[in-house]
Image 1 (tube, rainbow, N blue to C red):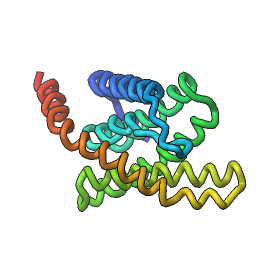
Image 2: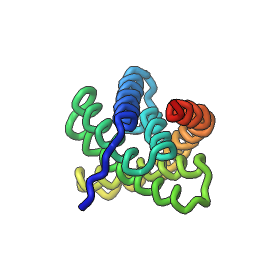
Image 3: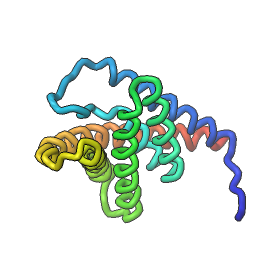
Length: 174
């Protein structure tokens, strides 16, 4: 098995992305918006995950996502929040990675489907934890909220990613 070296620049970029995702997670805890459905949030940290996926790749986005979920869970949540976030985050990332690899969908569509899958992943865990299939009635609300939040994250990603790519490429030239 061949070891792959990671450059200091990549390590620094990953650390900055994890830190930014943590800041976004914290900011989200301060926003007093109650959507009326437990667990429905804006998903600001997902902006960093989508950017990581499109800027540096799937493995790196996975690392940023998992580290962010555990750190934010320990800092701002609890074991249950880690469990739900991990289920949603991993399903969302897996779907976004597959969709991105097809090269047939825009970043907007990938983000929307990722947002929807994030909510579906959390719902599956909730059904298993509380052992109540009636939670399936949340699906319409979760589809709508996943669509809206995924759309917002996708729009912002589409706007900021070109500038981030230019900055990343300019730094590589030095």
